[in-house]
Length: 430
Image (cartoon, rainbow, N blue to C red):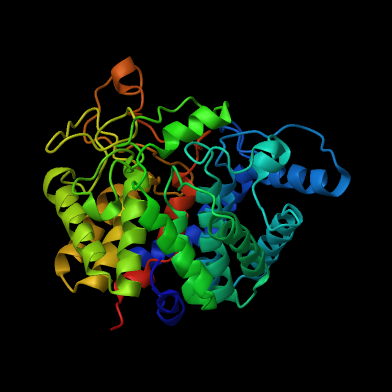
């Protein structure tokens, strides 16, 4: 997430995190690969790899057997798994794992359209609706995660096929939003930080320009999603375009002072903002990041480092509203907080950022995975109530036992990519 050279240069040989890195290599990555291929008995179906196969088949033959399955952002699970595998390969070279990664990358390449566009949902299910639903459809989000995987795989293995694929997608996005002047920004931030990673890897100034564009236009037209919904006349889950807190678009980013809405979206956005401030020297953007950081850590963060107190919207709510038994505290949100803290530490040498990283890592990220690496928490409440948690309507999200997998499986591969890159967070080079 920060300096990939640190992943390659430093190795955690033993001890607490050394054991975790080996667990990721030996158990977590193989288990999750099986989950992505629907090979875990009794687990929720993923269909991720099959979605890419169907997209490739449709592009080759004009039709495919079967239908797209899963969330509109299902592609991102594969991307995060590949990123985690890349970090693991840098620490523990494994020819068989690398071969399987290469096969998946080949499949991803076959699922890419001629103009660079890559997204299995729209290739298989809705080819006539590309870029019409930025609020809900996660096209930029999925692209961002695959860009991150591409950078990691190139820098950790030296292989650039996935990097070339995602440069093609980035070029397509640049053409659509910059050259052709399409309006809008992603309903789920991620692409901003990913484009800056892609820029640092390739030195292509277009990618930095595109990242800054998405940051700068966010919230300038705070009614964009309402106008978009009126035009498109289709929906994924009927999200409310008037809920501007949920998508962090109620004001331009430099004017935002409180962490609002979907917690993962928020901290991914703030990570991109901090990254952009570091790249450009934008003091106003840096100050906005500091203000948002202080609001999170002083008013909207659990003692565990968990963030996002509400099940509805997986969201921040109001200052000091931090219930224990109905806490959401999503694993991905804790990981996003670590990313944000890491970028802030590059911006400002203050140990408070490292302290927050450790707090979220030990209490939320590690808790998000069973000790044997085969079960996972999406939600991390601070209190469970027998017979109520996981059962009562108000507590249904707060499961007392970790499931094998999730229909919405964003968290497990996020844990894998975080733990397999832990050496990056142990050192900072100035």
